[in-house]
Length: 494
Ligand SMILES: Cc1cc2nc3c(=O)[nH]c(=O)nc-3n(C[C@H](O)[C@H](O)[C@H](O)COP(=O)(O)OP(=O)(O)OC[C@H]3O[C@@H](n4cnc5c(N)ncnc54)[C@H](O)[C@@H]3O)c2cc1C
Image 1 (cartoon, rainbow, N blue to C red):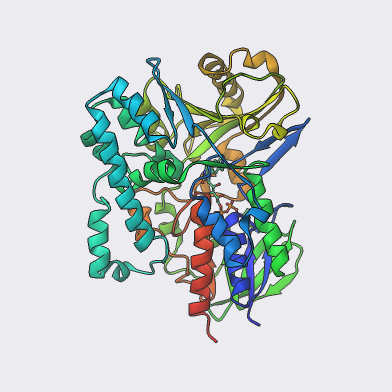
Image 2: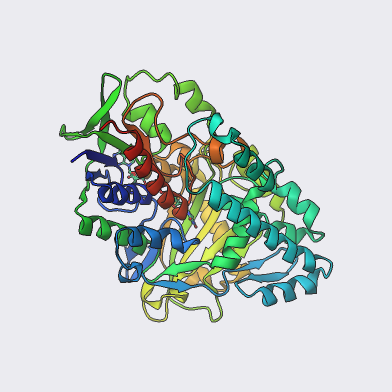
């Protein structure tokens, strides 16, 4: 039986482990921390439960597929609750707009603020739906090793039809008259850690997949996905070793032969799949192994995705009518984007969002209480920014703004308070510059231009997760696990 070691029990790692096991491998996952899920992580205190990472769960079929592939019923592992509305967005001029799966509700709101834009919104969704289906057919079920893969005529045609040559912000500017609708149709680029100015208009597809496939919440919180995936691994006979940081990938004769743990244990393998960040894998885990392709200069050129500043707050009260997600757009969205992605400094008055998971699943907070998550986008770690010095003041400003936006009386109701900055992300998950989605999805790092999972420097080594193809985000890394396992099977010498 061929043997595989997966470094990291993030969702990408767990998904790869499942698929390799199904392909007949003996699989061991080695995780540095003491629990599964990576960035999908839970904090519990005084009866409150907080998801520390992702809160927006789209493309639920990508997770379900993991269980179905193993012949299991996904609903035996994970209960999914639909969110209605998906988000309530507040604009600085007082406009409140709810995005949901009800097209008529959304169109009624569009009509109220900009009648000319109503047919344009319909057209936008239809176009985004066409793009989504092209992406699903041509990009979500394969990996790209080199430029030549994209030069097939059908791929070139698909590339043109996917609106991949224009930026998302230019496309929305042409599509909508009302600037607030432009913002609503493009802010989703931040979900992939990039600015709408820097990603192809292809990413309009996110608007469609939310509208058509919904936004969901697993009962118990997003962490329930990690628990379910780890349980599936156990049911299939995949071993997961926790508290076992990998120190080195053992390379002999140009080929990965296993891993060396920090405690000196060596695990031999025919294939090593690293779920750790690309920079950590190449820059640290390969030690002195020569790297002609992914050398230090190339690593330095790769742009990390953005990071985040987050507050986890337990409040001893409720707010009637508070939705699961509230977005508070700041006074100047263009300045937000410039500060995060160009100037790389903490935002002056950031757009931010509030997630209140106990609104959907009351078990996540004590009776009469609310668990809250306030996230403001933050730049990846850059020189000169001292988060330890500014975090307290930043937190207070965010609480002030949340009080004004949708949580009156918040400050005096806080009974649990934690914060997380880009520096914490880098320390806890080894993610380069604190980036939360791996590499940015900007033009030159998306789709086939994103680094390929199969290493060109070391045979028998693959990467899976946010910093490789197909990209970052919960559904994408889970799909990536399937693609990488398939690639391992295809390329491993018999
Ligand atoms: C704050 C935040 C908000 C987000 N919001 C969303 C959202 O709303 N929707 C969405 O879809 N996505 C969101 N994401 C992104 C999503 O969480 C990630 O893209 C995804 O979970 C990353 O999975 P991964 O497989 O790349 O691995 P990771 O989660 O990065 O896990 C990698 C694992 O490898 C382990 N590891 C690293 N180095 C070693 C080593 N040397 N030895 C052993 N183990 C090691 C780490 O401990 C970790 O467990 C968010 C992320 C964050 C942080």
